[in-house]
Length: 392
Image 1 (cartoon, rainbow, N blue to C red):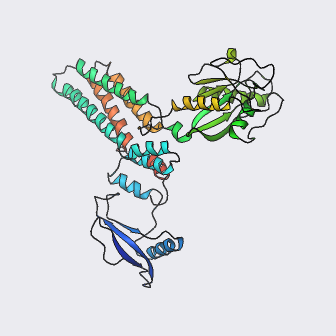
Image 2: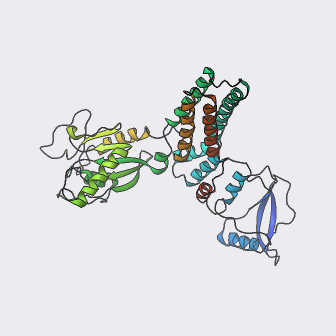
Image 3: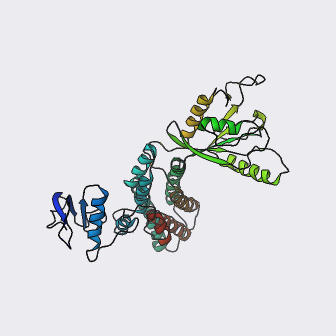
């Protein structure tokens, strides 16, 4: 189609022609990358054509007539890069996140992961645990049957487990990807649904004077100060004999427990314990409304009074559960495997029997191997790479 290919890593203009008819399809740039120094580790040719749909369709149709060529499966190029050792599983996850990023914060976090930030940290952990394993194995082989562990080995296991725990204590990626869960809760008729409608700017939640109108939760995605949040309306929290309402109340309490930020519209005496709670006095436009105090935000869904102050406070608390800009944040899979390794190291730090310590260190190494994808799990890999767009 392009005639003679250019030198490796050199872009040159080529006339692309239909191999069957010789018809000119486009004037395009051709680039050649010789493996293993390519994105996938294989020999790769890129054709940079004009972006019109007819041009692209014509070139793809011509390519399909070439023997041995086929369309790539979703994620196939990234999976080949992984299989050929060009990237590890954490970098592939970062690339998948990058393709799905919708905010600047999501893009930066994904880029840090896709460029190997976590992989380099895991390499350091693996080297340390490998050195500990070697020391334990030497103790088994050469200490004349003695199995008491050296105190220094225990201390090193404890230090490494503490390092892993410091990563586990960081904010996770899920609130950044899925949105910070902001739950609006309180007793019936406290103004929850009216407040949510005012914040959203349209009537999304049903509002009546009848207690118990809201029986299920309502999730509304929106941005507060550039922070992605899931604003959630809940059923009024009270004792009820209505079976359907009781189900809604139970779900509401579960959401209160899961909330990243809790907006509470009940009295102070009824307020649940929560690390990031905003106490709200609603309906402050009413004549008999009590005076707000310094730690209570007075709002009115009718006049809009206090809504901006409430959103500023919610945004400030929401930032606490998000990773720092550009920082590496763990996803659920990564955190679980790092926790497995940390647990094995914590147990090793208090064990006095060397063979047991050696086995625990093998378990930690296995968790790191699963983290980077060196221990292949095909179902998990299929689930990851299917997230990619066609070919990528």
